[in-house]
Image (cartoon, rainbow, N blue to C red; front, side, top):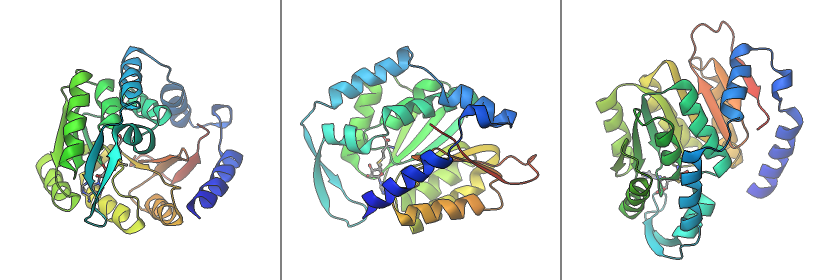
Length: 257
Ligand SMILES: C[S@@+](CC[C@H](N)C(=O)[O-])C[C@H]1O[C@@H](n2cnc3c(N)ncnc32)[C@H](O)[C@@H]1O
């Protein structure tokens, strides 16, 4: 059911998305050049080589499921290939951090630390707080970050129900938030609403899997409509929101990536 929904949405995305040749706004054009056209470099190669290693590991770990309270088993290889951000979108995150220089970053959903590695290596002076419920996953993420020489990530373990409000209170403002923890409409909107208080004029919110299901698409449509959000980019796998106050009217772009 969700596969059919995603295919339909992907075909529509291919049809309506715009390449840089059709973009008139300088901000959007520069985003396209600097973030969507970034190429492989040494740091990205280091992440690729770690991912290749992880992708071959049949070590199984027990993970607590936050939706049901049950636990399940998964191999590291499966977490690397099926759960972690793809290399393509990880590269996008990396160049986005390089381009906008967010200093205080929050991520909901660490898993084995792949997306946080892209965020961290892009700017070693940024501070990244990443939230994860499973201690077993957090431990693997820590080892992976160590292997990549990453020192600017703090993994906060526990249920988002507790860790999100406490990080919001502790940090106050985030320049970038990556929402990749729970792909249901109500939780996505709940986390979004909680995080709004942390957003400044230059903050960026990124939502993963905006076409994962009809529910997620509904959440994305509601987020786009929020009065504080003035500009959005739909990249199909991820949706990006800006809070720029100088924009007089809201604009939503579907960018070919
Ligand atoms: C899709 S994975 C994150 C993938 C990661 N961002 C990456 O690309 O490498 C989502 C993670 O969120 C965690 N999670 C989901 N709901 C949670 C909750 N309520 N509290 C804490 N962690 C949660 C899961 O354990 C899972 O590891």
